[in-house]
Image 1: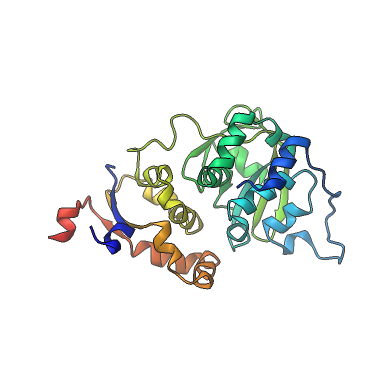
Image 2: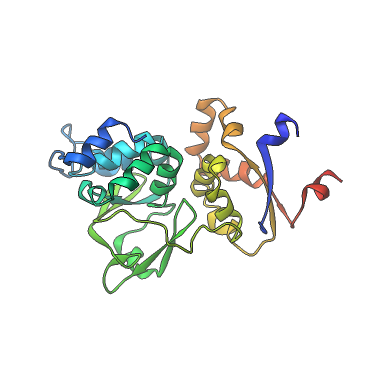
Amino acid sequence: MDKQTKEVFPVSKKLLLPSIVAACLAIGCAGETTSSTTATGESLESRPITEVAADHDGLLTLLAALEAADLIETLAADGPFTLFAPTDEAFAKIPKEDIDALLADPDALRDLLLYHVVADDLTAADVLAATSLTTVQGAEITVQAEAATLNGTVNLIETDIIAENGVIHLIDSVLMPLADEGMEGDNIVDIAVSDDRFSTLVTALGVAELVETLQGEGPFTVFAPTNEAFAKLPQETLDALLHDPDALLEILLYHVVPGDLRAADVLA
């Protein structure tokens, strides 16, 4: 198989933390008291999620993790996004062996963080009106409205922190994908999520709001660019696409063909 072929795989439906994070997890982090405006009087609503989060108490571990996973610019894009933001105390609940595993696997960290992001602008009322939410990572978060919990045990502790490109809701534990989500063979998105080579594609699908479409019945064949393929784009081009969901959607749909096509069908 030549080099070009290795970078794009047809996928059928049949189918790190840096030292600051370790320090935050070990001793806890404390931020400055938040307010509805910045020191210069700028409204929080005029700034992206990441900047609003930076002004909020107790999110230093999350911000350091987002930076380590190279997700700061993604969450500064137009969105909209809903971020379920674990506090520093939430990260401190994670067992040391799990922290060590994340330290050793930045791709796993990225997937975990993307499981906390929904590509929509959801207030607390919107969240509690749903029974489940599809994350940018591809797996589902279940919602228990009566108890105001996610996945049965994670509590919403502060809600409706408004940013220019979405909403932040603080949670008291780190969300973990449910055991039956994201298993290989479920659908195209699940297959992509389970393969570290496609983490950039998974992010792009979320920004372009294609996750739900490609989790549908299909059948679809996706010519899936790997992370290596995306890396060949100039950085400014990739950044521009992540800030332009309509243009990104058009490009991604150019990689999708209706039908269940095997390699032999494509090459015939």
